[in-house]
Length: 436
Image (cartoon, rainbow, N blue to C red; front, side):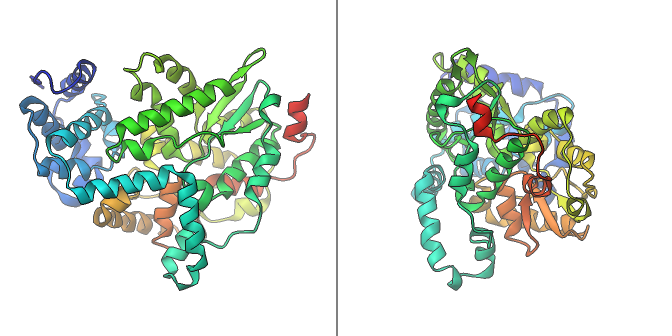
């Protein structure tokens, strides 16, 4: 692709990255076959190839229209196109540059700006979000069934904080091989049992745990709602905290940094790209991102060392697994959860068009509700066609979005594993292990 970007619009590093992506695209159109919005709309400008042309035109002319922004906003950033592309086009890098640039060239209206600001503040301020939920819970009986099912589900009563604190080691006791569990923004309030399941599994194997209660939001919500600088600030805050935590007497202590939400995990792994122009944090971002693992990556290691015994009930359940885009496309871990569960005797049916997005895509379900609902309906039709007792997934956004469209329970796959673990033998309490 012949590229002639104007000077002065982008910083030099951004300009070089944009040119690299544009030069890699050969217009083959393979991406259109797996793009959810193109398959729904049939509009070339709602395909990756079309959006690449729009961004190229904007960066060459230094001008943008509301129509250009509309097509970029409609992109889910599911990255199915990157999995499909035979040329290895890193579409997400170009679309991020395009979205950042269009905020200056074609500013949003005041209402749009306010909605995005409000979403960022609500999601990244953990106490604010939890406070809204507490108030909502008081009136949950008056709310529609769908809202109750998603935001106020009936779960076993337990003290999540106490349970996690009992598994997590005090800072002064951290030893080599510790796994840091990153608490998300909305998940601790909406589905606290997910991190508890992760802790239970690690405790089963005697793996020392630390919980990053001090850390801020990963920054993904900010990055995708016109708040790139806020996303970088949040990343720096996390890096500062984790860097200190990783410094033991005899060297680094962390075996892995885990987020049980694949959407957060893919963003944490992308910190080196986010901070590549930050001389102070660039190297730290690279080192810490190398420790970030999805739960399935860590459990593959643990299960290879010692295969756990699962109850027969787990193997008898009828489950349907939705693999989030952030897991299969963003992190390149397609089929890994299915294979891991298969080794444990839990068989999962094949899901039609499993590579396509469910429509959640972080804040997309709020900002683009019509397209989001279309994709959710399509995904649920395919999942429920297998007649499951329970739908399982690997990301809080997908979990909530799918749950809003079905009465079937939607759970994190870690909960299934944790529930099925037989009581461990010869495995000491994590705190005792840290005291050795």
